[in-house]
Length: 227
Image (cartoon, rainbow, N blue to C red; front, top):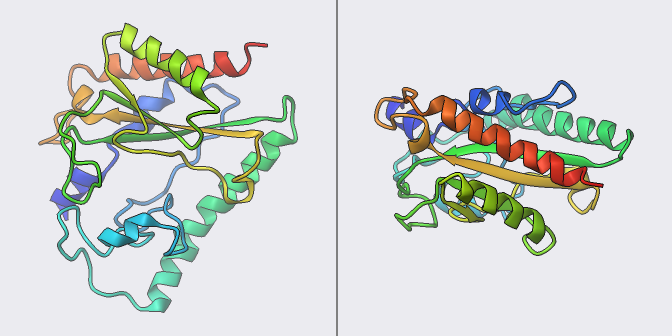
């Protein structure tokens, strides 16, 4: 379990992204590890592609395909979903609605993650050449100008960046999935930039990475309010 937590945890993302926060931002975090409940999966099994590898809302398999836990009853699964999954999405929908009721009546979601420097066995993208920063979007064509703006900044700082590779998309509140006023970008940080992946300890580059993230988020704000 300790090994799986080391591999699957988005280590230190709270600390990495807190430097980018302003006092008007709303921060919503899952209170438990994704090994308990993954709040960013679709509840509908047919919608969730990761069910194919035993990693839907409630994981059945480890990152290398071994059994993670015993088979849970429907009652046990419902308990976990009601306790962790549903409150997370209720909160996400609530604050999205609240922000949309205020000027400028737009909401920008930053979906904060990290990823291992080498692909894990369960991942669909097995390319060993991974970028330093992955930016995920649901609408690459609509957000082409913003994505190019961010790409130029990141590359100008000497880092590599890819769009929707090795991970794609970004979380959107269930009730606002088709609402054009709600924008969402996922920022995935390669763990090799800021930590020792064998020990889980931060590296000397942690604060430099934190500064990079702050500048990326700052440019998303600047782009959104350029008018």
